[in-house]
Amino acid sequence: MRNQVIPREQAFANARAVLDRARDRRDADRAAGRLAPEVELILRRLEREQRARQTPVHRAAA
Image 1: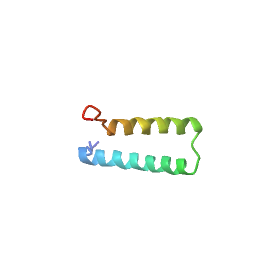
Image 2: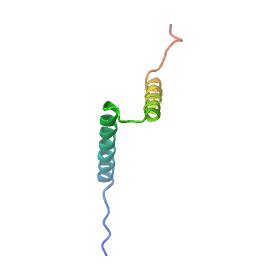
Image 3: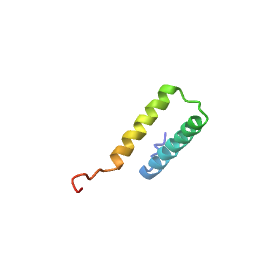
Image 4: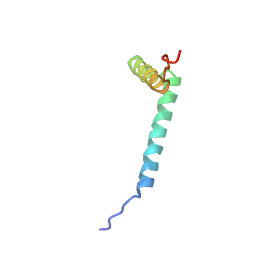
């Protein structure tokens, strides 16, 4: 029995490829209106939270 070890970089590349394909399927289903309404609401909430984290507000400088 041979032990086969996948190099770390290859493992990450494989995982990224799987994640990218899953996101593509999700986006296609979303564009076609095939997602359940509650899933659409969850995605919108997650996107709103992500935008809020990416956009720092500098009100102290105003």
